[in-house]
Image (cartoon, rainbow, N blue to C red; front, side, top):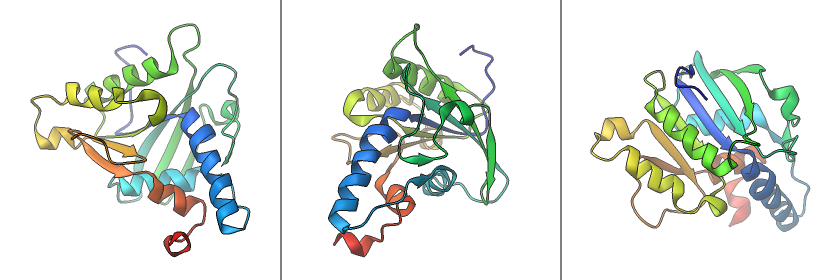
Length: 199
């Protein structure tokens, strides 16, 4: 991506492998535990839940969804819509505003992990962006997203640090200088699971 790349005020950066590996496995596991087949995730609905968890309100938001994927990955296996080629360049409207999709394949340039971290810094550095929501593949990236956030927000104010919302599966082992929330809340809602069912 070039320096002049235009981003929306709100950006969601997702590693597709998180959905295809972690979420699909969780869908099967929880379905078996609850004794019923869980639905595929309605992608716009889940992105709306995610955005609400990040603090977005109102109905006129412009939200850019960057879906980063490896070469040969053509679909979101447990989501609807699922075809990446169909999603790329498309947009949809929900009660929160408009979600615009861009699918990015770094094949031949770098790894998905490195591209994710580069994009994270580009978006954070953009004066156009007010909110960045991060959904990496936690098991692969280790502490690299957290280290990147620490480096970027070093010596910055709390207000500047609030620009990023880092969605996690478990509490980070050390403090992250950005907002942080569990992604499981929005996923359970998207899968139609009530909290009392898991007690």
